Image (cartoon, rainbow, N blue to C red; front, top):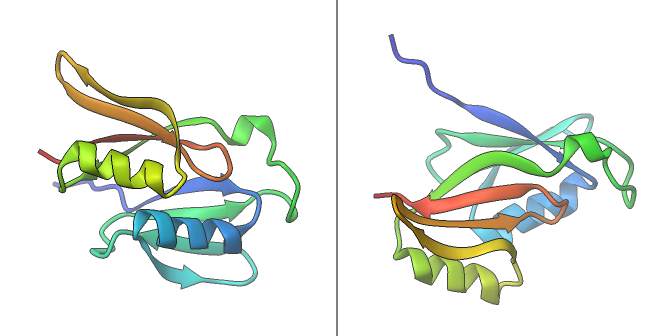
Length: 123
């Protein structure tokens, strides 16, 4: 039996603005956009998607318990430091710049709503 993750919810203030950030900054695409509830975005493969969940009205900050260190891990198949430089140039704010640890490279960055993402090389 194989169990796979297919989606994770991310609290956002404004789904339209968040969707643009995931598409324009991370290169994701939109898979579903239901005006009543959700927008799902993910990499081009679509094997895993983020469910952007608007937890408050536009311009209001989501409840503190809904944002922060999400533990969501992203990987990159391009050279790791190049990815980090590209994201930084695009205005992405890093909570932990790229760092070589005993077990490999890691960086942490923040999405537009304060959610933290971990970034590692794919291999």
